[in-house]
Image (cartoon, rainbow, N blue to C red; front, top):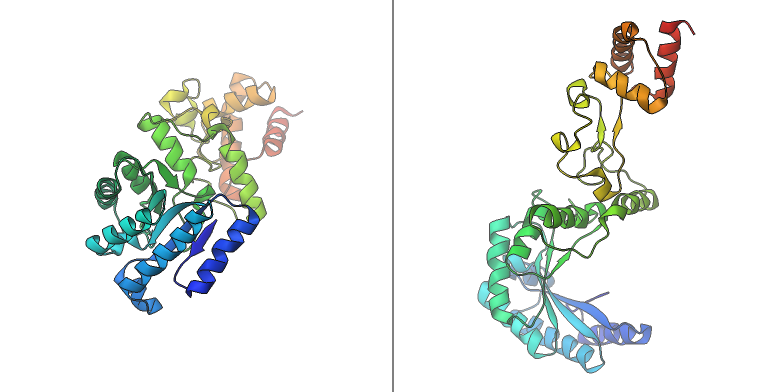
Length: 309
């Protein structure tokens, strides 16, 4: 849960009191820190520090563990950012969040800032990173944050979020595990199932080529690729089983003879070798005609027509 502190002090206290009523034991308390955000809200630097101190102290005194979230921190004057973080910790914040609110930092800048914040707050204070994907760099920036010492990455399923979305937690977890050998507390074998549930619930679909959860990742239409299907590591960067996916051959205008053979094996069908070329030609024509993939039912129909069954 999250409490914002750019409102009036009474409202902030009421928000914390409501967290207490609900029995919440941990919460983010956030405040704007960049000059452009402070100007937009009409709040001075001194005033925002005062409100942060008041809110964090009230939460701490009532047994709530606080992670302080510096809104637009990546565009904040570094000396003032340090002052706000230190004020939050001195008031009782147990953790801090480095926040790229509008996704304007590249990985190098994120790594620099997270490492700097680690120096400011010390090794005993956990550091989070919260990124957005406006330049398509949220995953790379999250990895950079971990390299710099962040212990927690804030992200979302499918990268859902404001504007271009947040960092995609599945992409980050998979990259950390497979490319950097960093252990993660995420059951990757369930991620595609969770992704599908979120899509259905929220009423949207992700691109078929989206990393980790896209429909195209482990299906092969190309005949040249299908010829390597028996050696998965030749055509895939990570095992389908790792993310709970199933490898499959699909048919279309890019298929080859190996595609036909593999699809027949999958469906328990037999085609005389002499007829495979004709079947392939019919599959390619069908795929080009419909501008899409040939379904299993259509494939069976093609075989029946060619073999005269």
